[in-house]
Length: 302
Ligand SMILES: C[S@@+](CC[C@H](N)C(=O)[O-])C[C@H]1O[C@@H](n2cnc3c(N)ncnc32)[C@H](O)[C@@H]1O
Image (cartoon, rainbow, N blue to C red; front, side):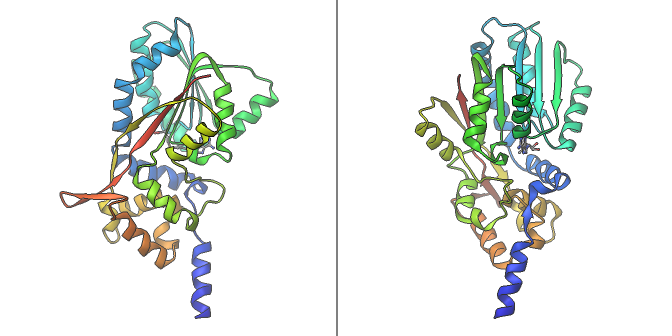
């Protein structure tokens, strides 16, 4: 019995955050994008809602300064740029990107190089975390402001959410808009994190927060916001296929754990696998297990 407990503790302690391995993180994120409608729901938002947002922040200005925080490999950024340039023909864009994962920056730069119709845009990449950027800006007494700042699916990875949001909100130019996209409080993630977040490796690197936490935070601080729900789903059927490499990548992404399959204690693994199939997380459709990946988009003004 004693041995069992010790073994369990050792296995539990060997779990480490996915964010501690940039290469593995990039692979799991890639798998997630291929098995979810994450980007499709963002593209719908960009098509339907961004034009009005652009008109509000552009307001006759030239050039327009934009900041992407945690932009990843840049696909969504380039879709937004395309929509912004369609709305503001001929207006030059200064586009700054804060992104700490080297693999992601390289892919973003490659995508830019392969996109032929990108004109009138000046990119600046900052390979650092948002808090490193904040520290550097403060040390340099830099007072650059931005007309549009977006934090898309990255707020889980900052140490202090309220102070990070305050910092970026303060970087907004007059009429500027801050867009935050985060997992919805009505999603399967919310249920998974609420029940198992405390048993997964936080390591200071990942906060299990959802739009419900942000709403509470904004309400308490009397910060005004508007928001939209963006329905999205993730096909997690492969997670239940023994020895599926894709399933393992998706499980790592779902649990934010590096090699969850090998390092999680068996009881935790069994419980999470079971929970993933429950209606709080997923529906079964056409023999597939479809996880609720609904997102929320918040808009904040200065
Ligand atoms: C889930 S991805 C989202 C990427 C992109 N915004 C998208 O939606 O496709 C999260 C991104 O945030 C980056 N990231 C992690 N910690 C960060 C931090 N502290 N500051 C800024 N970016 C961070 C990761 O490297 C990753 O590229």
